[in-house]
Image (cartoon, rainbow, N blue to C red):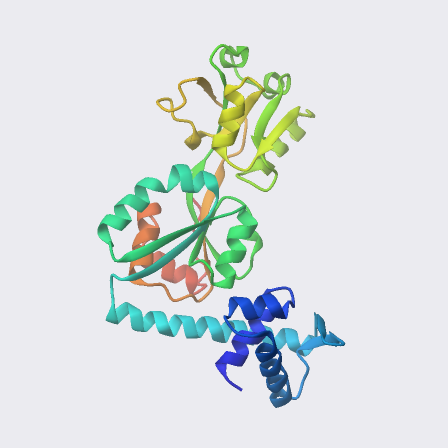
Length: 313
């Protein structure tokens, strides 16, 4: 058996048992992947996949254990390569970040600008998705770290590092009566059509919980996956918006008014997610500390080692 066979087995499982998709991702042929998997199973003496004719339809119980080991071994191989890169090319490499639109658009630009000025030899990649997707990208190795508000805590194989707390505001067209509501209440908000985030994004569960706690059913007429879309439709006077406070800029959003709503909703926490026992290049530690200054290299290493420290903000 060899590492190539491990990669083939792991990629087929990751691609939903689609051998063709796995072959394309690995830049090889479907028959070659199938042959290597058969040889691997023969050497192990167990079937990894359940077959119906030539199709793979499930993973066997021993196969699940093999895949768990294969994933660890492949990640360890990636870590070994990164150790070599760390010492041979300290400031050259790649940093792949999986994050949501709100973080990419509003929280990260200044950090990324400073980071690239410090490390011009590092190619930085941003992958956007909903919180669950960015976690899955990180677990698969497609991304080095995840930055999101929700879902990271749901993945046991990710180390969760709290970064910032944030809350929400209500936005509306400049003459909308909600802007003069004193004090702003959930009841007042619920009397108007609402435009806010999709259920999978940016702390939407906190919004739902607040209204439910007061026995209110908000009239959500439109949901979107990013803040800019919400602001566009609020500016058209199709409703009022409930938005991450960081996403409102009075200079850029001159057509809109804003009322702070932090007294109405629980705070949310932006977190960084890292694979357990991942090896991080030096510049990754620096990026993390630039984004969240309290997350020093020592703090990150303690968390990755699973020492059980309290990282609450």
